[in-house]
Amino acid sequence: MIFSVRDISKQFTVHFGDQANNSFSMEYHGMGTRSWASMLTVKAFVELTGKNHQEEAKPFFPLIAAEEPEAHLHPNAQRTLYKQLIASNGQIIISTHSPYLAALANQSELRALSIASQGVCVNQLNVNLPAEDKRKLQREVIHSRGELLFSKAIVLSEGETEEQSLPQLFTKYFGDNEFSMGINFIGVSGSGAKYRPFLSFAHDFNIPVFVFSDGEINTTKELKKNYDKIFGETDIDNSPNITILDRTDFEGYLFDSGFEESIENAIVKIDGTDAIDKWINKKQGTQEKSRKTDQPPCETCKQPIFDSSLRDYSYPDGRKKAMLEILDAKKPRYAQAVTEQLCKLDSDKLPPKIIELFEKIKVGRIL
View 1 (cartoon, rainbow, N blue to C red):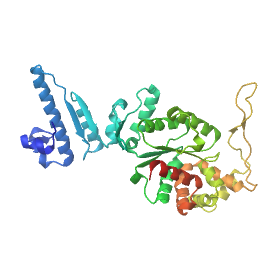
View 2 (cartoon, helix red, strand yellow):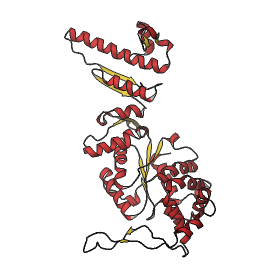
View 3 (cartoon, rainbow, N blue to C red):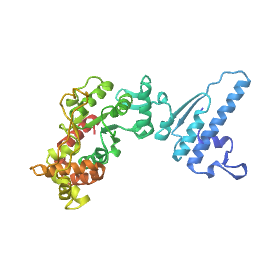
View 4 (cartoon, rainbow, N blue to C red):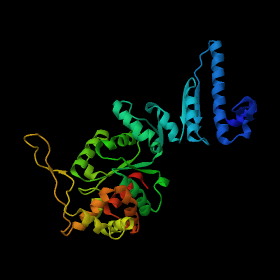
């Protein structure tokens, strides 16, 4: 049986309200309330039918299919309706574009439908993941970023700077917003294992996923380790889905690629024309942050060897060093300003690794 609001109203009149003496016929309510009321009416009808079958000792197993029941409902109303529907007897199938509903479902209950050349494909999450991996998948992806369920491509990066910059540079390069193309840019707030919930999610739901990674040795080592766990042995240096910076982080790469002027203009815009000189005068001769060396561990205590030298800005690259320290001190603060400076450039003058990433997305996503 297929029900609609119009079909139900032909058989009887449904009044909906908070109290019996304060209710109105369904046609006088808004679309959200009408949709909700129709769902509850169907639910009540199924329960009544089930009761009749039980009294007559007849088998009865209802199958309720609801098409986008969240339409016209605010998030909390969507959640309430979902809980009411799944409390019904039988099997409930809900098609939805709501991340709020999807976040309430068990991982084993989620199915993603996609159109492929051979027809409609049905994908589901790996139910055999370890409990901790399932928890991270639920917390980091499904609960926090439910919109990824409806992505046509996902782009992962390490930090907040890239998460702010890449979408705007994408718009600059392609002349259109990333969301209008169904693409989501996500900062995973770290590296290595931080990628894994997103990679696992994209793999299971057959969503193209791209990685824009810092290039430090340990970072790339951890990226490969976690990427291989999901996608199998991969040459990450030559992967069509992975872009790795040249042995540095995003800010360092911009300096190494000749965008020092753009960064300096961004710092000046935020802190004033003398900000860099003030930093140099204040920090000259002070202790730098300790850094782990490549030396063998201490023979006595077996601890790693760290090195900490004094800051010196007098050499030719001293001003560059000062600007890097300024950016590292408060990366999110300068991310937007740096991005604005880069967006002033022609599209073909953007940093080469950025263009490389976008071209890989263009090919892999078939833009």
